[in-house]
Image (cartoon, rainbow, N blue to C red; front, top):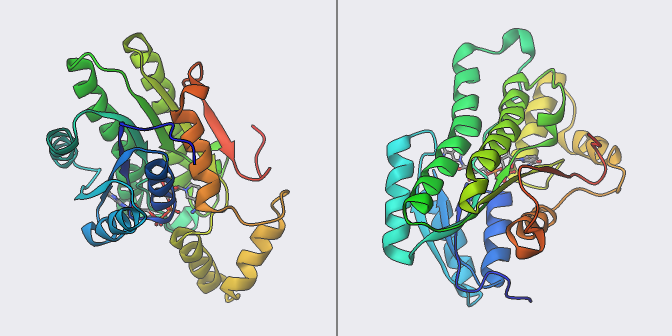
Length: 261
Ligand SMILES: NC(=O)c1ccc[n+]([C@@H]2O[C@H](COP(=O)([O-])OP(=O)(O)OC[C@H]3O[C@@H](n4cnc5c(N)ncnc54)[C@H](O)[C@@H]3O)[C@@H](O)[C@H]2O)c1
């Protein structure tokens, strides 16, 4: 395994989830000290323990990305315990299947809070500290192919993910002069609890079978297999690495050919 991130500290929010855990493990294997942060401290601890058991460096923290105070506390604790956080990956996210006409205001607000405001608060919180200390950083936000187009039964989620691409572009513009790069990845159908929950919700609505529905979704992927968290993690690692040193403000589709724009 290459050691592209040796000596760096990387914060992964939503690190207790499928894509977050896969990313945390890859970055740790490439030499980073990974701060696994999640609403579920229990899940964050499990992932950090798995990383340590593999002989790499990690610590676990709880965070609610919808709260500026919680994000500020996470940034302070991370700095105190592991020094400057020069890499960030924002993976925290939620989704709920609901037809457009039934989508309640409270659910719209919650999805936008976690997925969009949460991304903004984490990028801003770390960037403020880096700028104050005259340090450079690299950041990747996890958007989605749903941010590229319409979604009839997850309008809130699609809007939040389109918003993530917009925030990433604005952050890249604002932070380039401080030597910071900010990019997004747009995964497709990834083998994580979020995807299995989506299929269960869709099956419940339609009376179908969740496994068959997932198989149908996978059949529509040109590459012909479901995406793994590691597929996403490798693209994130590329964007964080020096190999992507001239790439900023971009949203990279990592979706097996599901989306082309
Ligand atoms: N699974 C997919 O197919 C897919 C596709 C495209 C994009 N994504 C995006 O990738 C990211 C990770 O998704 P995943 O599939 O790993 O889902 P997941 O459900 O496995 O993980 C999401 C994690 O976010 C955490 N979280 C939720 N609310 C939070 C909050 N307020 N503060 C901190 N953490 C919070 C959860 O506890 C969970 O651990 C999400 O942003 C998701 O929208 C997923």
